[in-house]
Image (cartoon, rainbow over all chains, first blue to last red; front, side, top):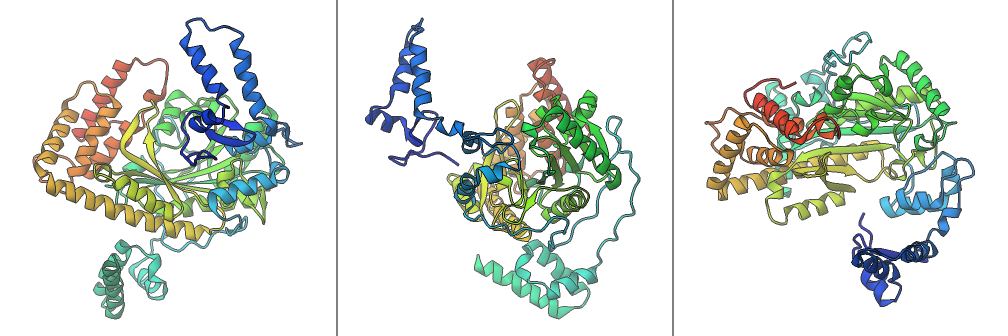
Amino acid sequence: MAMRCSRCGAQIGNSYVRFNGVLLCEDCARELKIDEVFRRQNSIFDQAFPMLDEFPGVFSAGSDLDFANAKIRCPRCGTTLRDIESGGQLGCIECYNTFNESIMKNILKRQGSSEYMGRKPGEAADVKGEAKQDTPVQETAQVKPEVKEEPKAPEANNDDILTKMKDADLSTFTDQEIEDAMKKAAAAEDYSLAVKLRDELKSRKEGN
Amino acid sequence: MWYEKEGNNMDVVLSTKIVLNRNIKGFPFPPKMSDADRENVLGMARQAAGTMGLNFVRTDELEDNAKEDLYNQFYAGYAFLNSNAKTGYLMSKTEGLGVIINNTDHISIVSMVPGTDVVTAYKRADDLAVQFEKSMDIAYTDKFGFLTSQIKSVGTGMQLMMTLALPGIEKTEGAVQVLAKRVEKYDWQMIPMTHSDGIRENGIYVLTNVATLGITEQEIIDKTRKVQEDIIKLENSCRKNICTKKKGVVEDQYYRAYATLSYCRRIETAEALTLINWLRLGQNYIDTSDADLDWNKINKLTQKVRRNYTDSAVKGVRPKDRASARAAFIRDIMKGGQAS
């Protein structure tokens, strides 16, 4: 996600200043007279041999402006709040308790919801749709699987697909799947299903 | 290789990849793990592999040609395969399926399929995830779901990525922006792909899901199918439009690209991908009877040019030798060879 200037809202490129936790673009920083970092940077690059006493000024200006969040640490792994705010990288499970508030903010900003709705551990998700048969890896000279083959699951036949289509909510199938099923239904002389699928396809096309 | 198998809509969607991240309670996440912790997790993975029918390998014991195999087939990244950070890999007997141990998370199940078959990719990964969850104490809370080392994947722990070849959309003014906005509505992100040598891969984009909380696995899959359908429709109409309105230009560029790829002796990645884009653009919409080319060849060319272990190896191979080697396997594929 692109960063934006907190003052003017413009998208921020490589040059920005973080001042008291507020992100400012180069133009706004200059207007607010807190553009020391940029000015010093230019003056260094303009000179063939920059004066050594310029450097501490640049670095101390940076450390005064931000990094206060570098002091808040996870008691277990030492990850700082700054690590999380800058990269979204956590160090251990305990970080979820230590930085709960910051993590929630990050999640809400990025995803718009913080409520877990997925499956529980050890319970397979009930995902609709057919999975293809597994293709075994071809053994190469370099990486050879050492495990035995398991019997393959039998492929679903036409009747299974048509039964599924009859009962399922058709909006969960793609155009291609419906078209294929329509042909199969017609071949199996299940004309009521074929008509239903044709109408679904037609309404989708008209909808577009 | 898994990506050479037949898949749906592979003229637009090169591959669909699902990564399910899981972590084991009692250990810090990999970036903060000690060597002893890493060894313990590797030991647990080795034990689990035995009961799950997977083959365990330590990456620091892998031969170079084995690393090349894993890298070229997109199973793992170059940095992961060449780090000495006590990492491992579990190989499945199913093509396109594997488990990365101790990378960003303790367990990252990677499932890839050619084309759009997201249900197959998900079910394969989920089967393995359930087995890990039953045999190990996996980090999970009712509030956050599966706890991961990166905030962006906490919840379902699921990252879904589609690699798309969109020369039609890219060559149509404003179409990339239209598509980017469209996919945002489904909570997805579209990112231009960058090659390992830093260049932009023309016409190649990766689409990733953003939401991992407030959404079920079924909803993610349903949204994926809708996004896929929208993209395929838009790309095909852009290709058709360009090939109808600029038929002469596309035909000329198609055959120039065909000839260059068939006879080149040295070629850079960027140039090869640009030429392949012209082939992809015209293949279904112009008269290609003078060219001995099908979608299998085009897709194989695309993936082999994009993912080449020697391109990522910084030392050892001179740029001109890489360009020569690249030209050689491209010529081989154009002639119908295997270019393994």
